[in-house]
Length: 540
Image 1 (cartoon, one colour):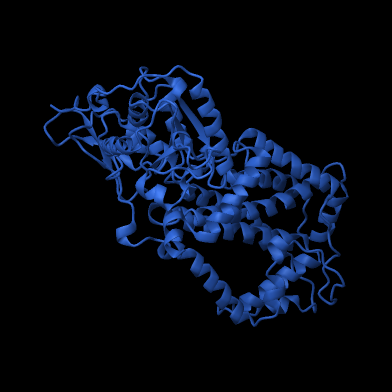
Image 2 (cartoon, rainbow, N blue to C red):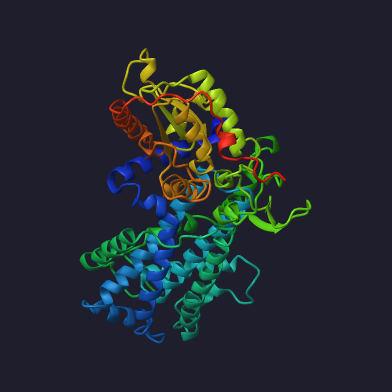
């Protein structure tokens, strides 16, 4: 179990994530699955919070905090639902950030070059939380009072302030206006920190997609706006430091910690909370594989590099740059920065002459593997070969299939195990974006009836843009494209997440039916894809 967790991203966590993804794909389809867009939803929430917050700020009064919020709440035509939308979306931002972090953790996208994104994401979550805390205190109802009093108790445990903050909440005197001014200032200033750390969070990504698809974006905003109109969040009774409230409408997204913290000494709250925060910040350290288990970064063989810049353009993490050659030839050559490379292998699929990629996963390595695969599998004109991303449904066929790259998918074809001719064969790849199109050509021309590429849903690609660039190479002529001599009818793509074995099975069944209805294509025996792709054209 431990080895499987290390290899695939986390035992129970990754299985739970697979089930959730499959369920949400069934409801929303993979294009609009909110779990695939959890990070982008946080940014969308931030934009909505800024817009609604600016409106609410126009009516807020530091000298009469509760009365001004109550007046806003009395505006049924505007203020009430905007305040409700502001509150609901602030809850959604925290929930979406936690889901996004859980996905990254379960998929082991937390260490190495991705560590900066993990740490900055935790800081963003913390800033969101503190910003929401100050917002509740600004309303100064009984919930805001509870947050303020408990916060003062915790801060008094630190040797920071000369006078205990808790003295301000004894009820002997009214709270000064400066208290509410500082809360308002923090509530306005903290979004600046959110914007700054958001930039840090995506700084190592090429073409970062900050917002979800328009239909999901406006659908989510509309749904929460309707909820704010139909079920406006209650405003509790006004805070009174001399009374214990009988009831307290609480927001458990921001106030979940109150019952636990109140039952503990302030010092222990800091110890427990600090330990949890430190453990989370150290996730990139304790999830980092041992040196011998880490996938090596890509590298460029200058002998085959033509300086076309395609790997530089396609790299999802801006890990490749073009530099001057030092081998006596004119022009530029690709160079991979190991500190930025996550070994996704997208560059291997981008290189027509197959001169770049992680060791063992370049286009040349893939051709060598597919030759061995064909020698063992010997697919016929009625057979389907599944070229499967090992992070998706094809990766769940079992450890034997992953290790050997050749196995019958149990139950995948909906046929008895004895029907060997009908069982699809699995050729594993690390990512659809890593797949070189010459592999597909080789399989088709060697006699396979059809090649089905089983890829992850595009918005859940471990390589971010791997599926996107794969489709561009196969269907739209992007560099390292699938050659026109390959019959496109014998190629299909299915998007199947790790928990969607049925989707993969149904896709293979439909594709096989289509293949069997075609005329049999003769296998070519005297061809060499390496020669036809002019692999050595860069050699002087």
